[in-house]
Image (cartoon, rainbow, N blue to C red):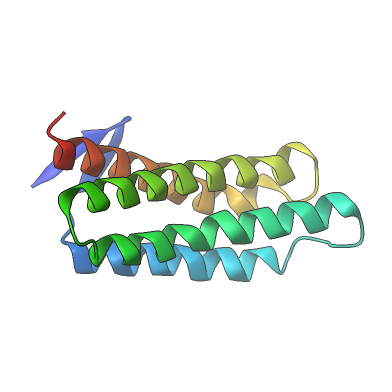
Length: 129
């Protein structure tokens, strides 16, 4: 079964597939962050923020799978949604600041936006809204 979210065609995934997807995203973020020049303050700050938010997507998704209640699950998924959205913002900044070319970041930016949409839909479904 599939859903169309924000103009994206997204196949429904089971929790194991989604966990793998968020982990892969985090690993891609780690690799990409090494490409940001850290010779100035902006590069260092942006690299740290991208690392923090991008890896938090996987960590908080993992924690959500171990939630002890529906309310805890909803809260964790909400955090994953926020972190994915924040990662998307931080991925836009090196492009707009001329630090990295868009071609290096566009696939990660797309993934961050898709993960944000998936988590928003999951949170709404879990909370019955």
